[in-house]
Length: 162
Image (tube, rainbow, N blue to C red):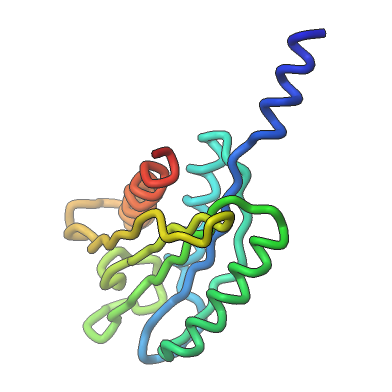
């Protein structure tokens, strides 16, 4: 009986987070495959850590005010859903010299920035920025994007773990 009550209490105190990925580039093309791949990687990483994860669909924009509107809407939805943390992720792309701009290639990503917000206090707990490593060290393009997104997820996890 004590074990059953302990399990119920543990799940009642589960950590939850929501994230929004904003694809930022001048061409305003469709959502890139690498954004979807990163999104999937974040779900896998946080789920494996026992965190309840949700997200809003990836949005493409090059306009800062549009970006704010999307983030505010997503954050409000997460707050109404009882989520504890909200993560704003901005994936900046530069495909001007890419041989395959539509592919999930690490070299198409310029940088990813993020901000972690505690929705209960409305305070920014931390933020960060990562620039992808040289893509040529990866024989498999998917592995490069996966490893890059895993590194971002680790940094975000360290912020919410404090």
